[in-house]
Length: 120
Length: 107
Image (tube, rainbow over all chains, first blue to last red; front, side, top):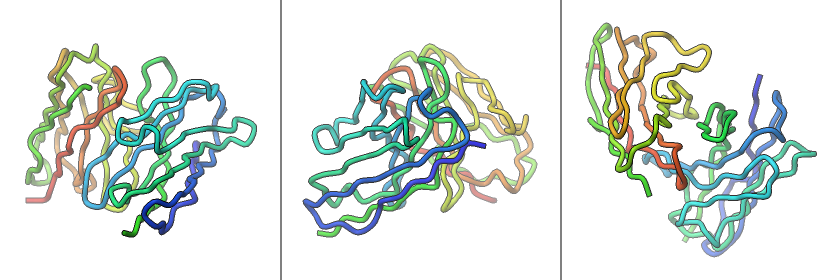
């Protein structure tokens, strides 16, 4: 059974930093793209970032480019999101999502999320 | 960027009803369209991928159809556990984008 467990969320000050982690189990972590998706309170889903299985190629939504950094440690089965220069609008639940197999992938498994709140 | 437009944004329906949700994309997706279900306080769950394929464990009352830029999620005979918010998502190209969501409420 695939399990994705996010951690690292919490209250941060505007301009501050947080590092989210997602620990995976139940599948061969190094074989799949991994992703972060967020959801602001009462709002819809918003893709944030993706990383290929090797960690060499990364992709970002324009609104976090240069602010967030996605990375992975395949030896530790862990995905990361380094969040810097946090803004109030970054307040959201952040979900880790596993990509399905194939070049074109959807999000076939999701973690329960970790909540990030940025105070002004 | 590919824009995804869902309609309606909300609907009220009764148990046993047939429900249809539409998703339109600003560019052709070559079928790379997924649907997700999200219940309050829970993570999203994949319902449909590649326009019409169901992941293992998804009930057959859910179906997807469409092509090009127009796609549909249909729930035949709505069940109590189906009251939730549904999102479409394109995975044809980055940035990956979601529709705004459709909230299905009890009439």
